[in-house]
Structure formats: structure tokens, C-alpha cells
Picture 1: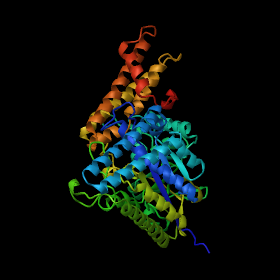
Picture 2: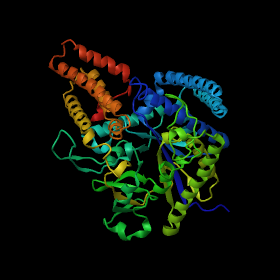
Picture 3: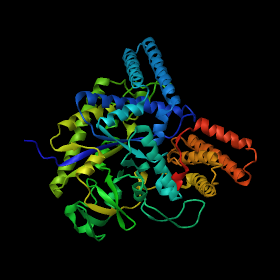
Picture 4: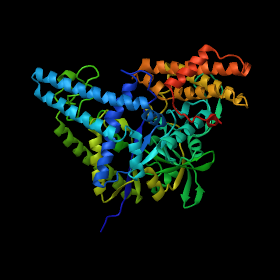
Length: 562
């Protein structure tokens, strides 16, 4: 007799890269996108294909940000990735010759392995018509995975100045996901898992006033989104607001979470409905399970640090391939050659450990509360394949092991909530999954200038939009300005500056988009003053450059900011 399921496992993968096409190549720019495609997205498609062949249903919830979808669809990306793969193949051939000449047969064998691997990925890329998003969509239509949306360019909700900007980010995101993937998503990935409740807001730059801003849940709810994921502490620190019994909603006190132990208040294994503005929203939140997530991504105890895995930081030459194992906490010069068989064994071992931890979490929850729990494991997709080369093998083995589980159900977020709706409503605090659980990565003295630029752009755009002529004259300029505003609002720019990952590139992108934005707005001011006046040469160049370099969101609608 089949054992009763005691809970579900939800793997959530978040795919995102900022818009880099036409904006640099190496070390920062288009190579980021090509590396992600070769090391993460094509391998994940391979895993999904294998699951299909083996009759497995991994039931992942997979988010591809709208700006990533725009890049994957671009002809420059499709042609560029084919060339990048050929470059890697030739690099592997040259490495093999060099290693043989240096009497390093073990490294020469790895170079041959690289050449074969790259050839396989190139064949896969051509076999899917160079359409990565389309291949993923095929698996979604076959009900193997669920697709999520996100903000258009990963705009950071807690620090956006105007609710109109938050709405535009969400609306552009939902519209792009529907246009590119053919699905109207019901779930979303919050950029940086960043949530803010409704309430007063003091802008961090430019303005000294305090203003009211809407809650993130309400903004997403208005666009048909019904669930998203947050970090653990937001649910753990949430205030109890309501108990839900079927269609009935009963108000409770904020202290109920302290004594009503049987309902699982504050547990990361329990979904909750968001309470905002004195009402229960239609949005359900699931929290990241810390024990399950940490064992994968932690630099101290995480699986990717196993000595048998491929070392990320050591390459053979500039922009070269990797031939060495993690080895241990030794200098790069002391890394030993990679052994693929040992790494494959490690991936299987770690998959078994991972599934065991999920099982233990659900058993403990069920034993203490007698409730059906959910282990939610959200990760940046690039962890699997890019940062951790064996990550896709690990995911495939997890899917195989989960298919054999008698106590755990692998489900998408949507399936989990449809079968087991949340039975409590909470008011969550503000927070992120970033360092410190707050906004310090995106808001500190070093990047205050970014928010000055971004806030002035928000103010100027909304002012010009409010004065937009009824006959539509100037809409071409406002549309391009809106496109630049969305790109300027990417959370990636303050992130790469604050974390020192690419300070020069982040600053360059901020001022490039801000400069084009200002020129386009200047053109709109000219139109408002004299619609018959010839267009300024700087404005004309800004229009040309914006259309040539930043051709995203072709259906951009100025009503998104209403």
C-alpha cells in the first residue's frame, strides 16, 4: 500500500541577466549571457530532455525574467552564441595540442572531453532552432515544469520612488512573458526576493518628504499574480492577521502566532496569504527553506565546495576553459586535474543527501504539527552549471530520486497551493534575500548617486507623461524614454557596484541609460514647446542609439505607468 504523502518539495529556479547585448563583450557584457547559455541554460534543457525520455516529471517552477527572454529571442544572441560555441571548440582543440606538447596527457584528455562536450551543446542549440526559451516552453506545455514571470528589468521594489514605476515593471514583465512564452503566469519571482508592505516611505535621495506607497502584494495581485517566494525571515517575523477556513476569513490578534502553536505560524514550511491595507489579498507567499538551501549554495558547507568538483576560478589562459578540480582550500597553482568520474559520483551522493534533508524536514514538521508541509528551495539558476559545473547532473539525480519517494511530492508552486491552500493570513515586514536580509546591498553611501539619478528620471518621466499631448505627438520619444527608464531601474547596476563585482561596468550602464533618457526627454520638452520645430541632432542620435542598442519590449505601452 502506498504511503501517505506528508509534504511537497518545490524547486524554484530563477533565470536572470541584465540587458547586455550591444553593451560590452568581455570581461563584462555579452560574454556573461553566452556563458550562462552554455553553462546553465543548454545543460538544463538537456536535463529536461532526459527527464522526458525517462518519463520523469521534475515539477520545477522556473522563472525567466522578461529582460532575459528578450535577449534569448534576439538575433544577435542566437548568432553570437553559435560563434561563441565554435570559439570554445577551437579553444579546446588548441589546448589539447598544447597539453600534449607539454607532456600533460591527463589535461589533454580533458581538452578532448571539452571539445566533445561543446560539440554536443552546439548540436543541441541547432536542434532547438537556436530557441532556448522555446525549448523550455515546450517542456512547460508538456506539464513538466511551471513558468514564472518577474519585473521587466529586475527593478528593486522597496526603493522605487513611485508606485507607477512598480506597476510598470510588473505590467511590462507579465506582458513580455505572455508574448514570449505564450502563457499568462500566475506566479512571479520577486527581484532579489525583495518585499515591502504598504506604508510610509522616505526616499533615500533627492526628496525629503515621507509618502505612502502600496504593498508589493497588492501591486502584483492587480496584474493577476497569485504567488511568489520570499526569504525565511519575512515569514518568521510576520504578524498574524487572519485564520482561513474554506472561504471564511476570521480576524485574529497579532499575538496569536505566539500561542497558537498547532497552526505553524512563522514556519518556512507553511505558505501564508498576504494581508495588506486591512484586507486579505489573493497572493500567497512561500518561504525559502534555510537548511535545504544552505547546503547547496553556502560557501562554507555547500555541496559545490567538494574537492571533487570542477574549480570555477582557475582557467587555462584568459577567457579559457577549466581543467582543475576544487581540490581543497589551496592556492590556484596547487589545484589538481579534474576527474569527471569522481565529480559525477559526488553529484549522485549529494543528491541523495539533499533528498534526505528534504525528507527529514518534512517528517519533523509532520511529527510536531501533524500538518502537510512544503520545502521550498529557490535558487539562482546560474548556480547550476555556471558556478557549479555539476549542478545540472545534481538536479537530474534529484528528479530521479524524488520520483521514487513515497512520502514527498515534487510539485510546482501553483500545484502545491491549489491542492493545499494557505490557512492563515499575515502582515510581513520589509526584507530581501540579500546580505543582512535587508536593502543594504542596494542602498548604501557608495551607491547613493545611483538613486539620485534613478529618482530624478522617475520624476521627469511621469511629469512629461502627465503632459503628453492628446494627439500622440511625442509618443515616439516618450516610448523610448520609458524603455531607457526600465533599463536604468535594473537592480543589477547597484548590485555589481556595491558587491565590487563590476564597478566600472555598473556605473557605465547607469550613466549610458541616464544620458539617453535625458536626451529623449529633452526632445519631448522641445515638442511640447513647438511641435513644428526640427528635431535636435542630439535627440535624433539618442532615438537612433536607443532603437539600435536597446530594442526591448517592442509592445511598450505608456499606459503601463498609469
